[in-house]
Image (tube, rainbow, N blue to C red):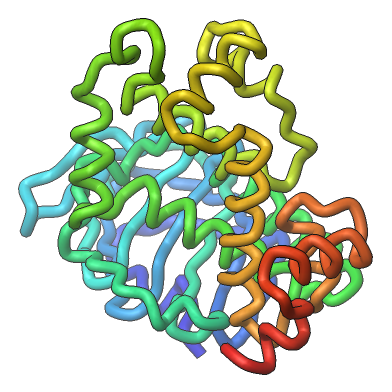
Amino acid sequence: MHTIQEAFQTESPFFSCLDNQALGSAYDIQINELRLPNPGEGVYRSDSHCFLQYVVFRDQQLQGSYPSRLAEGNVGQLMFVPPGATLEWHWSTGRQRAVSCMFDLESIGALGNYDWNWAEVDLSRTLDIRNDYLLLGMRKLAEEAKCPGFASELQIESTLTLMAFELRKQFFAGPHEAHNKELQRSDVHDRDSRLGRAQLQLIHNYIESHLKTDITVADIAQQCNLSPRALATLYKNTTATTLRQAIAQARLDRARAMLSNPRLLIKQVGYECGFRGAAAFVAAFHKATGMTPAQYRQRYS
């Protein structure tokens, strides 16, 4: 068992009130309130676990620094510490209420099979994350810690799996991230007949972040400041596929990844990928792959 208290060390006095906790073999989720009578400092490090903190309320200043990487800054509403990184905290007098979560990727489904490249993360970007999808995930984890529902452990592992993919998309360097940076430098439009690479990335990021919802072409068009008809035409000219096909493929890719975790129920995977029910998920998956979700899991997990 690995807990947040074991990873955090300080000699500064503080008072902690633990309101709720969800503790499993691969994670520790806590909701607590800190009272800090004096300015202080502490150190957090875990060689195996990711750490996320969502601040619900704060009336004090909190700064973080990674001395080995010369990165520092104010800690925002949402922050992340990757495994193997040593974060030094510096706080002023005050109090804070937060949701904290640490989890081990190696112990959740097939996440350990991916190359996470934590050493390549730009640590200066971890102290103040602006990501609504991760915020939503932290709130869901807090709900499970406060009021565990049906199959709570599976719900938590499912949420952590999706959050891990979101962290990968946001932070990882390597070929995929280098490609994203190239997209960001490109023009928004390639003349007037195609979408630019930066706008394509915006579209794909939006789809990935909203798979659980009923995504429409109009929703995506609004993000791009285009009419639905214009967007549909430009996307088809650029990719030779339709937006509906892109959404369906994104749902299928996420379903494949989640099915590798045998602890997740088939209907739960379908729900997290945006299907209206188990029957709709099974039918769509079988049409695309020639296998039912259960057959795919049996063959590849």
